[in-house]
Structure formats: C-alpha cells, structure tokens
Length: 387
Image (tube, rainbow, N blue to C red; front, side, top):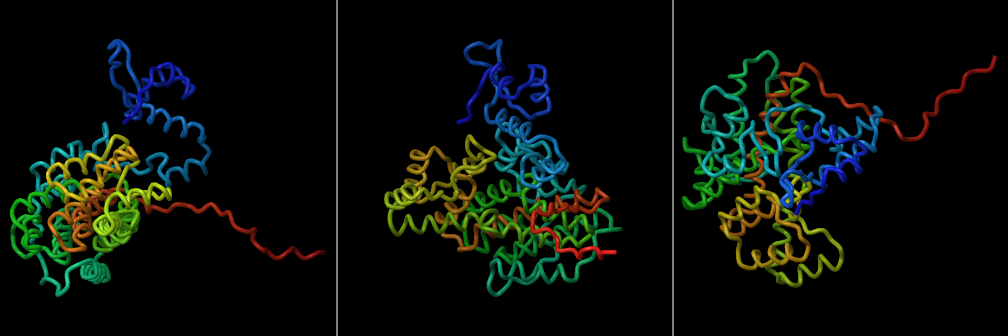
C-alpha cells in the first residue's frame, strides 16, 4: 500500500517551501489526500515525494536530463493519448478500467485515433493462415511493411482506414474468424469459445489498448517520425512489444503456472523465495497499490484452483499483487485458449495504441534522433607531424 507523509516531512525531503509543494500538486506531480486525523491538513504520497527528490538530486545538467528522459525518470514526449491518475490508466481522459466494462476495442480505437467515423476491423481482412500465431502475424506484417507507402502527404481519414485493415489482419493472423462482428466475438469464434468468454476477451482487449509511452510506443513513434509506412511503424512497435520484459511477459507467467501445475504451489513458491528469484507477473512499478487492469480482469474470470492458491500465497508472502500478465495467463489457463493467445490478445489490442502513437507523432515535424554519449576508449587519432 502507498504511504503518506505530512507537509513538513515533504518539505524536508524535497528541500522546498510549502508553496512549491502546492505547485507540484497542481501540476499533477504529487498526489494529496485529506489527513483522516485532521481534515484541515493534507497528506502527500511518499512515493511521489521520493521520485521528485531523486530527480532534484540528479540535477539539471544536459547529459543527466537526456539520460533520464530515455530511461524513465521524467517524460520526454507530449501525448494526449494515455496518462495515469490516482493509480489508474486513462485513455484521452476516460478511465480505461471503466471503459472495459462495456466498450469494444473498436470503440476504444475510435477514441484513441480521434476518428470521425466508427472503426471497423473487418475491412480488407485476408484469408486465415494455415497455422495462426505470431509467426503468421509477423510474417504478414513484414510483407506489408516492405511495400507500404509513407505516411507523409496523406489525409488522416485515409490513414485511419489503413489502420483498421492492419489491426484486422493482425487479429486474423492470431486466429480471429472472418466476419463483420466486433473483434472479441471473432476471437471467441476462432478459438471456439462461448459468449461469456467473448466478454472476457473484450474486457482484456480494452484494458491492453494503450499504456502511455512504453518502449514499444516509443519505437513506433521513432519510425513514424521518419515518415515510415504505418505497417512499418506497427512492426517496429510490435517487435519491441515481443520481448519477455514487455508484451510477452505473460509467456513467462505461463511457464511459471506450468511449474505450479507440475510441482505444486508450495514447492514453487518456496523455490523462488528461498533463491531470491523474482516472481514474474507480480508487482508493477507504475501501480504500487496494485494493477487495476489485473484486478478488473481477475474479478471477472476466476483462475484455476491451483493457480488461485498460488496467487494468494505469493501475495501474502511478498506483498506484491498480480499484474495484467498474471491475469492474462490465468485467463488462458482457465479457458484453455491457444498457447499463444495471451500474446495474440496483447499484440492485437496494443496495435491500436501503437497506431495511435504513430498517428499522433505525424503532427510533429521533427525526426526523433537521440544522441549517444561516448564512454568507450579514446579515439586513436594520428599524431600531428613534427615540424
């Protein structure tokens, strides 16, 4: 749980006066709540104060700011797509967890893309692959990227139409069935699941659509800044997403769940805790009080009994709550979805966000080009000739 400190402690840690603390609160950098012991006073989130203190200590030298911008100490690219407020993600100011109660991925795409018309992912959908999965998805996307047209000089509505086709083709490659229905229903049909499971897929797709400036969103924006085609931007983003420390983290959790089913929850928990190994899928640096996306999905789909016991035991012993990767892996296990279903759902849903970031980046007439700070051996340059 988050910890809270009074004004005098916040001022001491930050080395500032109360007026500056108020300014941090007004800019959304510091969360504040009423003091339950005295409603005339306020308490400030200790984690926010600590983060601000670290940034102050790092200083404002050009090299420090540049390095911090790349590695997460402070935001570097303005965006109107997704933000975090009070421990929850918001899409263009709308609570993503609340949207997941009823919205479809098509409706979220219309919101994130600021599209003037309803989004339809069934247009220009190719034939289903013989073997659905990530190989089919990346192969199809690479072929489109090789022949794609630059985004420059093209109307936004045309790019929206192309984006619809890309998401639809990606979903088909991961096993969604053809048809004009919403994407979650097509996935349920392709994976031979009943209507209640289709609702769970809809919820998961909405929760995964975007997550602010992730490494995959940054990669997609870099490609977009060069004028690359939309399939190339999406391929850049999804290639980054495919890493086990990002969008394929649910694969590590699935491997963990396999251990639990084979060895039992007691032995697996004991092994990880006794060796100091981190348990994949538990805890999230953005959500110290727990990932609300995971809570929303787990509330709708109870994991298998052994996995539920394991989650409960890990939380009790570590204090870490399950994140969205655990919820996805549990969904796959509970309903016996295809082995690559978790990544397929993540990649398809996040393709909406990656395309939104690519489209937003087109409004910035500047190529993203970070500079390297050389720390290697000194160059072996020729010595000047003696006179």
